[in-house]
Amino acid sequence: HNSTTLPGWMFQGNTSSDSLCGNFLGYLITWKYLVAGDPYKLQRVERVVRDVMSHIVDNHYRYIGSRGLPSTWGRWDPEFVNDRRDRADQRGVNSLQILSWLISSYRITQNETYITAYKHLVQEYGYAENIINQKNYSSRR
Image (tube, rainbow, N blue to C red):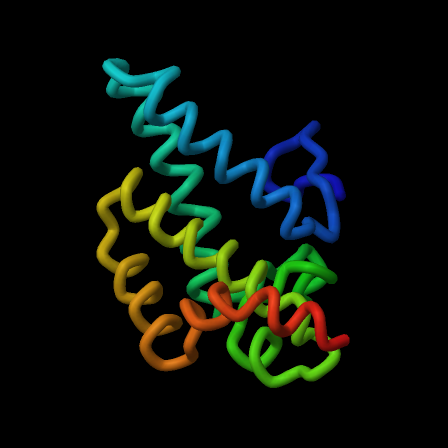
């Protein structure tokens, strides 16, 4: 998709959870090892992480694309993760993804919103149990 705010830039559409897994790993490695000691570069990494994670949290744990809809694999909201029987085998991996991203985002930005969201998903929606029970769900398909 052509950017409406950055002339000449194009962005991938329909971002997947796999893409975000790689991105968050890259953010954490970059922040911890590659730009440590450079305040300007650290700030840039923090901004990207804050922008991406805040987008997901602010949109009820969904990655909203350029058309205003969640991307095909950009959903970690409790209704999608816990309430859909056809997605039971994905509960653990989706729960692990969002919880690890929230913890990594907090570590990088120190934004309390991410810890609050983490606790909410664990305490109110059982995301930690989803991770533990992954093998049980995936074998019952």
